[in-house]
Image 1 (cartoon, rainbow, N blue to C red):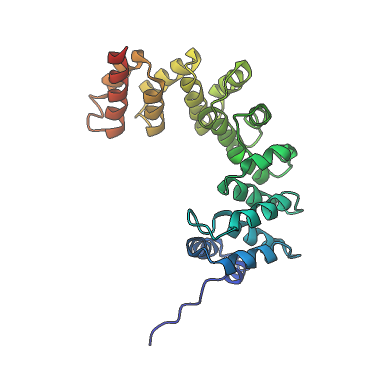
Image 2 (cartoon, rainbow, N blue to C red):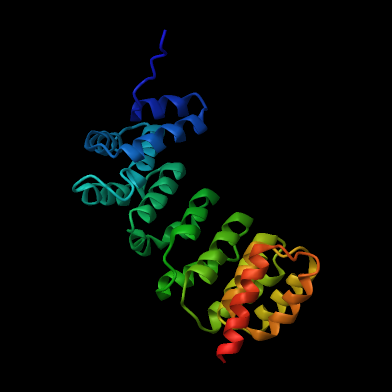
Length: 265
């Protein structure tokens, strides 16, 4: 007998979450996202007014990415106001879901009007702000500077990434904040600080990158930084590693970029 597979619905997502099956809930959400049905949009908009935070969070998660690039007609105009309203929810999980939802809907600039969320007592909310807040405007990068010194390592990591790699803003305050993270106890945060400083051609970042490239097997992100930095003095450091990692595609790619940049000069 052929097994009957239940039709994915938002109610089914909620049922999985109530049972503690979050992975299963996200699998269903992925199906709903791809399906992009207008009826699912309407269900999520309605569920966003539920008294149950589990239902409101599920609604926000669905509204975040439903339809992917082929979104239902009029979807964004319905989703963004709902997600914006959920930023003031009493549940931190719902607030975090709304923040991520606005980011995926290319409406992260809404967060610039809710910067108080960056000082939220819940690290999940601060993490969401750190990973989604636009950092090219002063209000955004000033907030990311604060979050880059957060007590939570994950928040610091994402804030440093958003400030350094994702933002094109520059200046003494940004450089000082990134330099402060070079001594962070969290390795991912340190790496993001190196990335941000090298991208801006800051000497401290270049020196930290050279030291990191000599210490251990080159990490892909460090090799990406080396290529992006386009600093010729890094070529000998990378060439010295070819003896150990001759077939490393990322290492060779970074060297090619640096050599091309050097020859162009």
